[in-house]
View 1 (cartoon, one colour):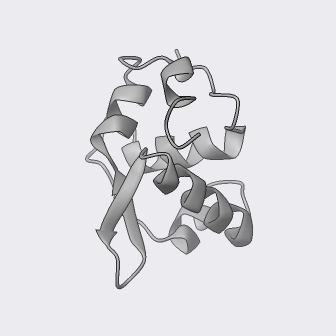
View 2: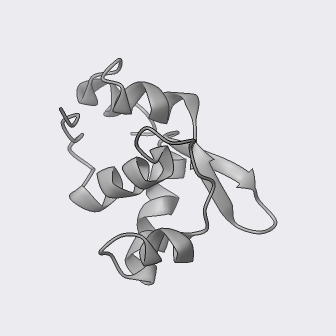
Length: 93
């Protein structure tokens, strides 16, 4: 079951997190452009949402200089259902 979205989130945010999680395979570290290629979202849309997800602690830089992102521990916990969406409301309000 997919976790519920926090009030500030949209389906784009969840799709980005799920793409980085990569299902039952090894997690991915991707640029916004590669996330866009592998989702139904445009590059600019992904770039904007990646910024919000990082601000809220759900993703982090894998390589800041190259703009590559990966899931953070908080992002993994959220996707696993270990953190309720209401708890995400309190982060960077």
